Image (tube, rainbow, N blue to C red):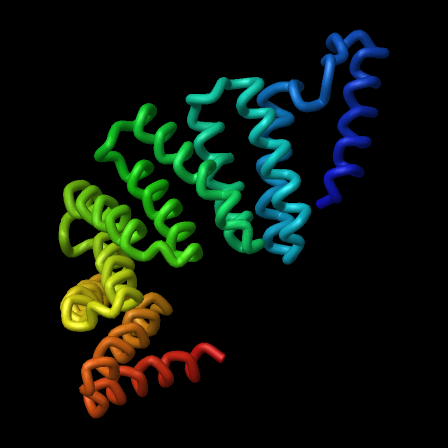
Amino acid sequence: MFPLMRFKQMAARALSLCALLGLGALSPGFAHAGPAEWKQLYDQIDLHLQAGSLEQSELFAREALKEAEATYGPNHRATASTLGKLVFVMRLRGKSAEALPLARRAVAVNTKLAGPDHPATAIALQSEAEILFALKRFGEAEKLHRRALAIFQKQYGEKSFQAATSLHNVGTMLLAQGQYPEAEKLLRRALAVKEEVLKPDHASIAHTLNNLALALEAQGKGAEAVKYRERAAAFHRKTR
């Protein structure tokens, strides 16, 4: 794993050596080097992300996007995947406003490539919704999560982890908008499916328990909320 500048220097030397040895013409610029270089850049995104270097991760994501566009074109799986990575990293860096147009572009590319009812499109919709949530545009985020929910239910069934996650997401958007009874309803559905399809100690269950407790507390159902909050706390104690 290297910083982007060091990575570029190494790549440039390698390309120069290839040219000297007659192994291939030197590309006019690193950003237009080809599939192998895109893959190298793309892999560096996660490596730096795992190391906690968000700035470097974003820089590699931007370079990988340029490479994908130059090598494959604007409407290719590599471009769509790189867009998704870049949006994710930018959201982590608090750049949600800047990331929103990229998130919307990712939805458009995935819809064109895979169709409006494909899981890849649903994942892109969720990503855009997370950006909108960070911008406190909860109503818009809810609509996107509902679209993702419909896709996952169609593709995987109502009792699937993907559908349960989307139910949780829609419930959370309703919670953020103060629609507590409806939020409670969806979070209960999400919890029921998660408890059916996941192991009891799965972190996703604890997330839904916490949000359900919030929805109950907001309605004055404190005693019931305590039960769910205690279950969530027990999970966190186990995972320490």
